Length: 80
Ligand code: SF4
Image (cartoon, rainbow, N blue to C red; front, side, top):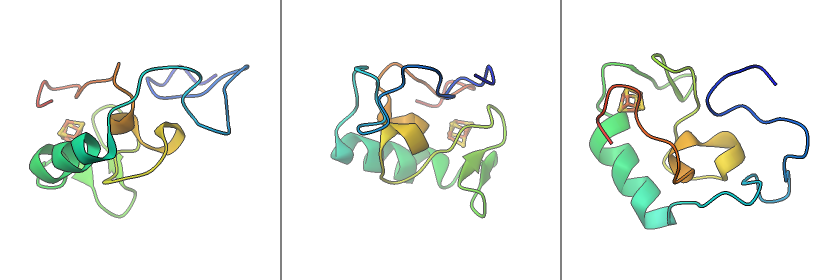
């Protein structure tokens, strides 16, 4: 476990990538990405990563690879 806010650790459910955690719907994820992350000055499009928290943020994809998908996670600077 790296200590990153979206890191995975022992016992992680790799099949779903959620480890039983609540997730946002695909529509919610797409809306958050398009509205906040994609135009954000902290978004690195090449790495598909937020440069503030270091987490992967994407338009779609499993929670294992997308912080936005995790309903318990939020933007580190309060945009969502
Ligand atoms: S998580 Fe927040 S700070 Fe990071 S890229 Fe998205 S909107 Fe910007």
